[in-house]
Image (cartoon, rainbow over all chains, first blue to last red):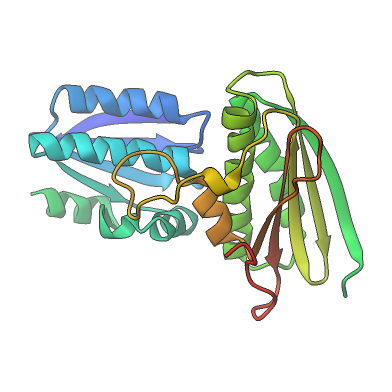
Length: 112
Length: 147
């Protein structure tokens, strides 16, 4: 799993994930996302276009980040979900919890 | 239409880095299947969940233990059988998750129940666990009897 993080706007960081998000890779992803939450990054948008597989361990990393950000008033948007990944969010009913966007532009507009 | 047309047996060990490898092998077989893409995606998720359960719960995150995955397909269905030889897991005692989840974890069995048409737990083995996960090719086939 590759994770690239960049600052796209003031107080907005974008994370690009590449690879499968499963029980093997989720500790690394959790660690990267924890750093963002530790520094109380106000707004995070996560690009999932290069993630074709996610399991419950992967979902858990996003739920944990979401809960942490909620505590300090941060905003989180996930975007460019592949169909397979979106299905997993829907089955877990997390599509009603997370803000999901179709593009980076839309994600940015949701946190602006 | 119910004769077995494909049966492949794979062996992996209880190391998380082997999850991707086993999914890759099953992906190769599913590529030849006439299951809809959504059903193929679902089977890969439940395969991962079942193997992860074996690693985490049956083997307590200890690497090097055997997990056998059987892929079986006929004209009517695809069946995945995940066998481990670790600690027995009583699925009836696993609590149902709250949805949407408020914390990480606890969704694996829910996914296996929801994303397959039938989930069976073979309790006949003296040691370990065997999960049998079935996806039918046509709607209207028998639904999940675990429900």
